[in-house]
Image (cartoon, rainbow, N blue to C red):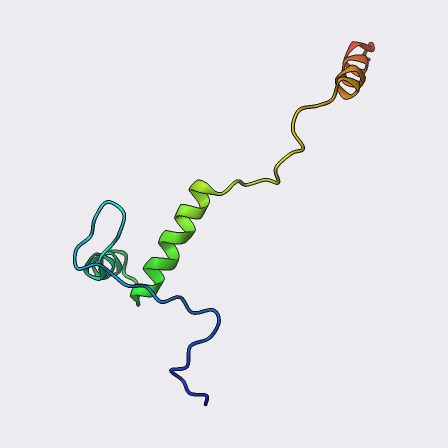
Amino acid sequence: MTSATSLTSDTLLIRFPAVSTIRRVSRDTISELAKQLGCASDSYVLHYAALRLADQVLPKYEPDDGLLSDKQMAAIGKLWSEPRD
């Protein structure tokens, strides 16, 4: 059965509390944010907020392999001590 109201695997259902708390946001708060930002829908506010949070929390680069080995440090020291033109 397929219809316009069918849920896809990309759908996330959210249950809103009656009032906003320090860890949860109410639907009224989302609606107020949508009005304030001039958004066409509440879902835009959720996407916008998630993107802002991701920008603040997620690293912008691939994690490195940890500290350099003694051999790597020696190679760097050798290159650094060579005369430069």
